[in-house]
Length: 288
Image 1 (cartoon, helix red, strand yellow):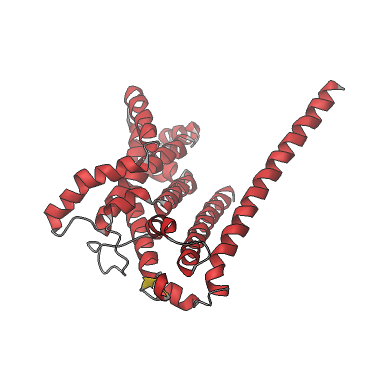
Image 2 (cartoon, rainbow, N blue to C red; image 1 turned 90 degrees about the vertical axis):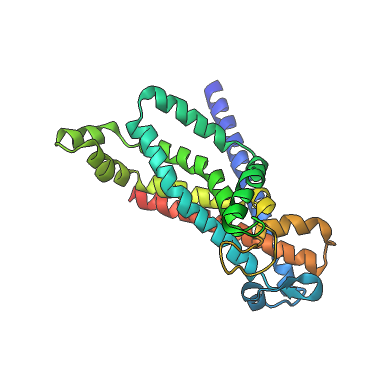
């Protein structure tokens, strides 16, 4: 009898926790969605202008977010392209090639770097990367390239840590069977381990892109924060997150400038949902 009561309590508490999480997620979606659509419904702003115009000045009825969209995607994709192969090489070394002592030293170090606050990476960018870009390419050093390099440093530990876990999750008998058939270690890693871990490796990359796309402070400190459509990596720019964080405290609730920033928040939320959907699709493909 007591065991049944405990089981009932456990199921009840679990159901309440799940219900609370679902309620909070739904509440966030409804709230941000309603606020984000206010600019188009109440203020009658053009959806086409929002996505395809490059002039952002809501105080004067200009709400073109193209520059921020292009900059956000450019910074995110470029950082992912640079960080992913580096992370893969590190993960292969730690999980497949390094000795036990070296692996036990490197992996905790990488995991510590995952938890470093973004402001620290921003300060490193200001002190090291901005002067380096200024010396190498000229200009002020504040540019999209600088933001890309800072984001690469930020997401590299996260992607590497996830990739290490993905490679270690591949059953050992896969490797043993490959080696028993006469394959070399390099062939085993390339033909067996990487193929078996491919879905999890892609998931790691998507997680890194999710963090990069939503990052605000570190990028804001080094990118220049100029509202324009960039024409190169050396151009200054402004991402969705940096524009949102800098402007939200300087607007009046219910005005067009405030509603426009909520529209940017809605875009960020939708992109987060899309990234999570991609992760689920990759996981579903792995199960098949």
